[in-house]
Image (cartoon, rainbow, N blue to C red):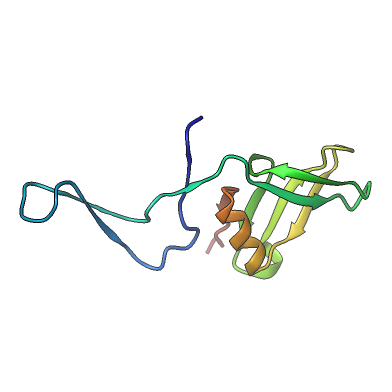
Length: 113
C-alpha cells in the first residue's frame, strides 16, 4: 500500500529542506514548502450519528473537514454507515488537529469579497 502524506493545514511560513549529498560533497536540491508527514493507513475515528444514535469507527477517507473563518463555518462531515444520514458536526481546534493529523481531507473555505 502506498503511504499517505499529510501536509500541515496551516503552514506558519515557508520551510526549506536540503536534499542530496552532504554539504560540500556535490550538488544539492533545496525544496521549499511543508514537509510531508507519513500517516498510518489504519487510522480510525470514533463517531456517532445524532439521527439513529449509532456509534461506529470511520476511516479517514470517510470524513471531510471544512475550515472556515469562524467556528460556525468550521466543521467535519460524514455519512452514517448505519442509516445513511449526512452528518455535520462543529470542529474546534483539537478536532481539527486530530483530523488533519489522521489524514482527513481538508477544505479551506474562503470568504468572497
